[in-house]
Length: 419
Image (cartoon, rainbow, N blue to C red; front, side):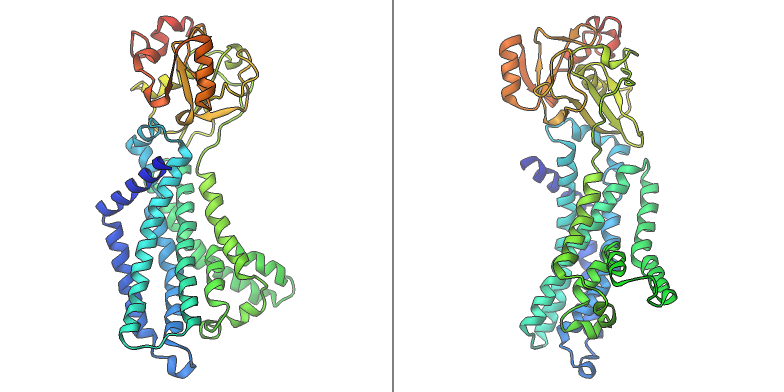
C-alpha cells in the first residue's frame, strides 16, 4: 500500500509541476460558473429548480470535457515512461507492475476528482450566494453527478493507460486518444441515432438498445444523470429513458467495468513457457536447463524475451546496451515449482514481488550461480537454510553477483560456460 501511495503521490506532484491540476481546475470552474449563470434563465418557463438546470448543463459539459482531460493526462503514462527509460527504473524498485499502474491511476484520478469537486462545487456555491433555495432531491442528484463524473474520468484514464501500453510512441498514443474521444463522444451517438431512425423499431429491440447504450460509457453516464428524476424532462431524455430498462445500479456497474477492464489489460501478463522458448544469451532451448527461468516483456513486442535462468533476466536489466522499454519482468516462482529440474510453465511471479536467494549451492542454466526467486520470504528463507545463501529483494541483487567479474555481459561470466 505504501508503494502504491508513493506512486500516486509522484503522479500528483508531476501534475502540479506540469500545471495540469491548476489548468483543469480553473477550466472546469470557469465553464461551470458560466453555465450556471447562463443556463439558469429557463427555470421560470420549465418549472425546474436552478440546481436542476445546472445539473443538466454540467452533465453535458462532463460528457465532452472530462473524457478529453482524462485521456490527455493518461495517454503517455506508460509509453512516456518507456521513451524516457524511467519505466525500467520504476520496475527496479520493490513494486510490481500492477502497483505502478494502480498508483498512477490513483494519482491521475485524484487530479480529476480535485478539479471536478472544486470546479463544480464553485457553481453550487455561486447559487447559494445568490440565495437560491435548493431542495433535497436536487442535492442528491448533484452528488450523484459529481461521483459519476469522477467515475467517468476513471473510465477514460484506464482507456488512456491501455492505449499507452499498446503503442511505441507518445505521438501515436495522443492521436489514438483523440480518436477514441471523438468516437465515444461524437461519432457513436450520431451513428446510433441514425440507426434508430433508419430502423424505425423493426430490428433494434429494447434489449439491443440497452446493450448498445452500455457499449458507450458516456451514454451510461448520460442515462444515470439525465434519464431519471426531475431533470429527465428538462434534459429531453424522457423518450430514451422510457425505452430502456437500465437501473442506476446497472449503469454504475457498467461504468465500473469500463474502468476495470482496460486498467487490467494495460498490465501485460506472463506467457506460458513452451518448447519454442529460446534463451537470449545461450541460444538454446530454455527447457533444456534446470532451475528458475525468466521472461521480460518489452513495449510493442508481442512475444517475451526468454532466459534460461532468472539470473540472466536480472542481468538484462543491468546491461547498458539492452533495451530499456521494459514493460514487465517475470521469473519462475520456485515456491510453486514441481521440482528444480521442472521449474514450471505457468508459475510466474513479478520479479519486483519476489524474494531471491543468492549465493546458494544451487546451480541453474549452464551450471552458473543462480538468483533463485520465491513468492514468499518464508519459502526463500527455508531454501537458504537448506542450500545456503542470503535472501534479498530484486532491487538489492548486487550487479557483481549477476554480471560476474567482467561486469558487462552474462556471456563473459566464467560461471556462464556455454552462454
